[in-house]
Image 1: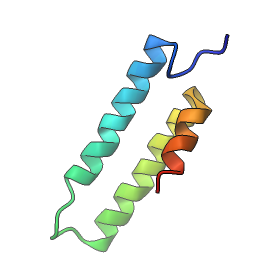
Image 2 (image 1 turned 60 degrees about the horizontal axis):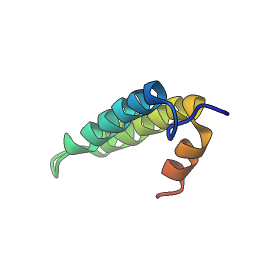
Image 3 (image 1 turned 90 degrees about the horizontal axis):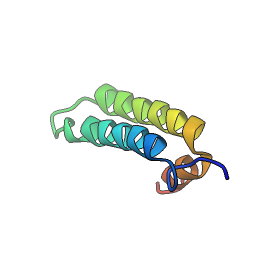
Length: 67
């Protein structure tokens, strides 16, 4: 059986940390944020999704398709 988000606690915890960091990126943006700051947040989000893909490709694909 292949390890993934659903059946491996270590992978799940690691991905959950990445998801938390992704949420923090956008929580810290406000109406006064510059377009460069917003762009940087989206770029960092993609980096986190790429890291998630290394652990569980299906989970990363579900995140990419959500927007």
